[in-house]
Each structure stands twice: as structure tokens, then as C-alpha cells.
Length: 334
Image (cartoon, rainbow, N blue to C red; front, side, top):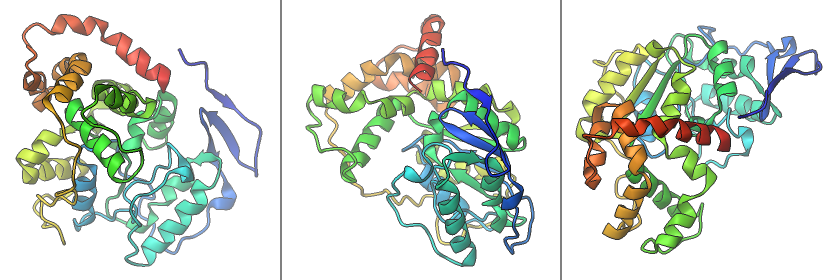
């Protein structure tokens, strides 16, 4: 169990500050309430997409950025709540107009602080005016309950999306991306020991159990404001998935998008690590329990995940009695 992590700190720059491990969270600061020059609207994010990494989040950002009902930040992943300014960005941010430049200057200044400032994070979204906007950062799947609760309390109308993907497929796509961008050293993808060395990393494991991620967010977000969508549906019918997400977010799915089609995939053609039958079977055995847990708890296309690897789904419900161990373990390493 985690210790009590929330307590009142001393005043700093005339602002009340609260500690929520591992960051301070600023409650209010009058000196920061300066005019931006944009039409006010509701200065707050309308939604968060909290993952999964390699689950279709880039597709989602591109679809929303091209839709007339949205103004999306010029950077897809803000990483404000997980690593502040320390996160490396693989792609340069968009610089389309003055709003983009204003946003980039503000978030650079905000992220340089050593605490989370929810009021000024909300003000990042002033450029949207009356449009919809949000933060698509897959790393938010790893946030702990204390930070999630503070975010939800501060933004009570916030909607949350999670894009779920078969854990075996997701991990292999994730490893392929890390090798491609030299985030990890190239390794022999046919060697089980080398695969395990890269699989059994804390950050990789925290992202690889969608049932635990969904459980953590569901505990803190009202059911009407939380939705799970599936990478399977993105492959099967991206137009239908786009419509479903737009309706949930309050946008008009009948409005055509600018610049991109619903099946546009900027990752198409990217080379992946070769996946041998031996390694695929090893990964399937590693995630066997999680595949069955997802089938029971997430439903939808996840019901078909175990059968892909030859696992019976007829008698798995009794195994869920042990799943609390998984959730406690994921919270502990978080």
C-alpha cells in the first residue's frame, strides 16, 4: 500500500500548494491570471485520451485536429501530468498560427515549474474558444489514483478515453517503435532472454495491463464520462470508430475532416521487428491471464483476444478471483 501522499504545504509565491506524489499541485495563483487575448470560452480541456500507447492515439489526434469542431494543441502529447518538461518529443510541434505559438510558449513555461498547476494547465486551452479540445497523452495511463482524483475533481465535466489493444500486439509494436527511434538498443528479437529483458521494464509493464489501467481510471471517473474503444475496431472500420468517438465528445460526426481520411495511418509502412511463432507463443503465455481478464472486464473485441492464441474462454471467470493481486501489484510499482 502507498503511504498517505496528500498534505498541505507552506505558501509559495502567494499560492496554496498541495503535494501529490511525485509532484506539487498548485491550487490557485492570482498573479498568473493574466489576459491571453483569446476569446475566453471555457478555458479547460474537454477530454483526456490516456492511452494506450500504440493503440491508435496518433490516428485519434489526426482525426480530431482535422475536424472543424476541434482546436487541438500543436503538440499531440503534452506529458504535463507524468513528466512535465523532461519528456523527449519525437516529432516537432505544429506551428500553424499565433494560437500554436502562444500555446507552445505557455506550456514550456508551465512545464518548467516543479509542481502541477491545474488552473494554468486549464488556461492552455483558451485558444479553443467555443471549440472542443483535449490532451492525448498515452503516458497518463500510468498515473496513480491521487493524481487522477485531483484532475477529475478540478475538471468535473472532463471526458476520458482509453484505446485498448491486445497486449501481445501492443507490446511488440511498442518494442518495434523503441528500436526504430533508438529509445532502446537494438536486440535479437528471436532470443527469448533478450525479449524478456526489454519486456520486464517498469515502464513497459505499467503500460501493458489494460485491465488494470481501466480499473484505475474507472474508480475515479463517472461511468458516463469514461469510454473504452478498441484498436480492433480501428482496423475493422475506422469510419465507424471515428463517428462513435465524435459523438461521445459532443462533436458532429457528419462534418467532413480536413486533410485526412478516416483510414489515414501515418505509421503505415513503418518496419516492425520480426515476430517468430516461438516469441509470439512466449508473449501469449506471459499475458495469458491478462488476455482472459480483458475478455471478461473490457468486453467488446477483447472477448476474442484469448482465442487468437489458442486459449479457451469458456472457464476463465473463476480465475478473476486472483486479479486483485494484479491490480495491487500495478499500483505498487506505480
